[in-house]
Image 1: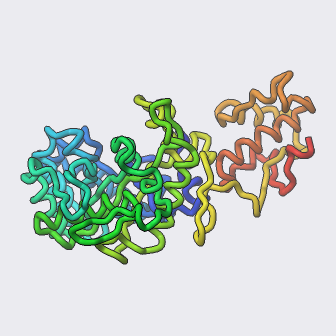
Image 2 (image 1 turned 180 degrees about the vertical axis):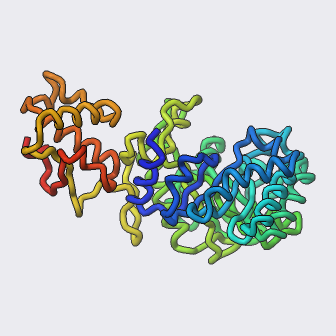
Image 3 (image 1 turned 90 degrees about the vertical axis):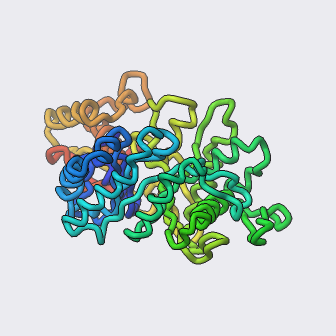
Length: 408
């Protein structure tokens, strides 16, 4: 994985203003300090039982992972666990206690006004999700869900929901059309209509969100907004996952961003924006499970985009910088020993792939330290998203607008 400083450089270069962490990593929170980026931190599932059983443990967690970092780091929410009801049901009885204990610690530090506390749920806790008006939460979770919703209502927090049309599509055995899952335009006769409300649904995402709204109203909670903590589409899969493709991932995420940014809301709550996090920033090449599990990222571990998101009216995200192209090159006047030392660093600790510089490889010629250093320096500079200070190498490198690969 890239270092926290590299991650933040990427977020800034892409103008990403909100990020969700799956823990409260100290180095990551330090790197995010003074950036203004809004951060959601998380209590990992394995820590939930301890926090839910002890007010002191919860207060200690908040002191260490929140109070120690604000206001420099702009923490705006705490996600307590992830999909606890479906992945760690033995912790369900203490889930609401954990939320309350953490909230109490925020109140004691006068931070409850700026930091919301909630817990992400899998959409699979919703039964009979279509039509949305007939949806309801799995009743066996009522002893947790009712106090949870009371807590969210009383603290003016939001219901965190993970929404994955990809899985709904995959599990529907052809009942859900691919275009309906990808937000592609449908002819009116293909739109899904809720016979009870006569609301028209043009995509799976809205239908799941509204199913959650109706499930809450079934329990008499009608004023808790929904916040989508995960949504996305994998860009690669194995033979059993033919629709996990670059094109579909690009289509889904581009359309999702456009859908959220146009403030249309959902058919049940038009005009109420459903804030949404895209899962996820980086591919995870060593993650276990099917190929798709490794390929939800927008970037690879070298911070190169997996694909370019095309957004009408919102510009292009994740595109390589073509309007203001800059490169990092070796200074021809530099001391050859200093260049060699910098080259060795870039190809070693700097983690640049320098195999192209070996004899017989495409970038071996011209075989001199200036040319080889220029290759390595520029590779590092681009990998670091051209962030300030990454083209210096103790004074032997400089930034240029001339592409060195066209000159070598």
